[in-house]
Length: 529
Image (cartoon, rainbow, N blue to C red; front, side, top):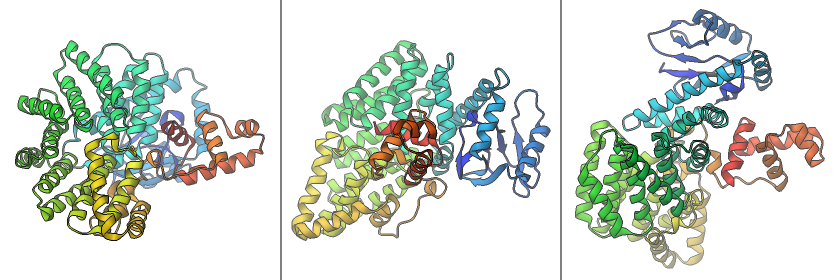
């Protein structure tokens, strides 16, 4: 088995906030560790334990095996190995026992936070390379672990800088994997809690700027990025300065300052990478330069830059940046009116983007493929793709960031397809695309049957970014009270309803949103504000 934390969980397939409960932290790895009791792991597996101070590995191993034997701990497959979950009532009981010993709860939370930080740093180091879909799946499975670590750090004196470091380290997860709103929520809290002029703050500022821009707040995004650049330069941190410059440039690009964006990225690409700069952002500098060239009609230069970026991706067996390079190649070949080649590159870009749940990239690529289909005379296909693109953009920004360039592409596609089909037929096809789920929509664009992408095979997509979920007015009231931290009896008292009725509302909310615990409802409600 690959190395993975096997954590108690708060529901099927979802790890519990470990600091909240009574549990052990277990990591599985091939070829190391003690022999595992057959109840605790698959035959032939080995287990490496990280026990709290004062406990021997053997003691924890026996405890885990005994708890599995008694069905107190439930052993389940995870995205990269075995994980454990603990029933909610037992978890709460364990937390009560932990709190009876002074300092034990904080010590457990610190260990869990430090483990999550190490895990995040490992994922960031390996992000520009193979295995990106697997990294996405692991981080999805650890969403509650991550939220627990961030919440503890940002609400505990002396731990806020570590919380800011954790939130900033996961920039690629927030931005590339459809979690912009949640990432911005944590970064806003972290930046407010840790105002000191540190490298962590420089990182947090540009990440917050990128995520703010992704949710259409370009002025805030620009302010954050400019502040990050000034701080990074004052600290002598060339890498974080280069990262901040990327954000400033991409805001210019999608803010319709194409000449300014072109000059900006010509400068950064000519400079080349600086020590410590993440290779993903080195590649994205090249992508945005090619994008500006494509928007300005300079197809030949755009293709040349894309080929340079592809060589970088191929050397590292990388997919996410490669998907953006392929999208720009599709744009460049559209400028050349080489529709077959443009469509081929666009479809391959979409396939790679689905693998990491890159919602923004999927929306951009669907718009481009709809334009190509309309140009090729496949008007019904174009209408379906437009409906799907509009559906995906609704989770990001219905106005496509107010970008004249993006909106003109969408408008031109409709103006070609609608008259050819007739308005009524166009609207039917558009509604059909709008009703498709993400995997089905991509399958339609690829002209393949819809199928779950790798991350969806083990964990549902982040529901907080899914605007198709609709709660009733009463359910919204209950969800808001859950987010405030109220228990079921307190909700019942507040709304003057029976406790059983309150419990029923919570269960229906969990079912509708695809969640397993109340902390997920709280995070979802925060993201909707």
